[in-house]
Amino acid sequence: MAQENINAADWIDVTVAIEHGMLHWPGDESIQITQSITIEEGAVANVTYLQLSAHTGTHVDAPLHFIDQGKDITEMLLHRLMGKVKVIEVKNGADISFQEIKDQVGDDDKRLIFKTKNSNSAWYKKDFSPDFVYLATDAAAFLRDKGVLTVGIDYLSIAGMDNGVDVHRILLNAEMCIVEGLNLEQIGAGAYEMICLPLKIKGSDGSPARVLLKKI
Image (cartoon, rainbow, N blue to C red; front, top):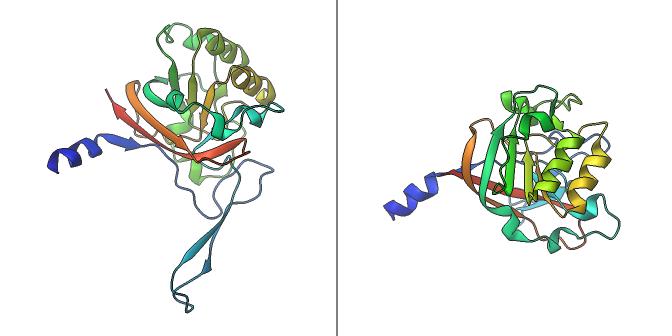
């Protein structure tokens, strides 16, 4: 049992907790978490009711998000979301550019997470900021051409306000898994094991996910 506890402690939860009224993408409905029945009011159990976008907090985008008739979240290959992942710390304060990452992504780096200045504070507890660091379009094309399977970032979107369609389509047309909304405040650059499991929601273009990292 002691060994099991030690091993469990090695995993770091990089998932943003879903909370009532939390930060969400502009235009999405607000997140509501309420109890539809309660023990306090005489029921035999508490039952929580959720109203939220599939792209709430830490979540995974499926191809269907930007591709008509694309694969939904239940059709994504889970092995792409589990295994060795490389965390790259980005210094540029505006975007994740091709020039900055071209020498940091090797042929064997199939899963990548970008830690940016977004992680300098608890972004998920603040109001939405359109000035978050995002993946540049040429960098997205580079990752596609390198055969990357999964890419993650520390804000609600991998793409910026002006290149959202282009970046998502480049990545999702290649069936790359996109993990958005990661909490990387306590994570440094380097190699990790990752477990990322989105909910199995038939017909959905995305899903909240629980994401764990372990340094290797």
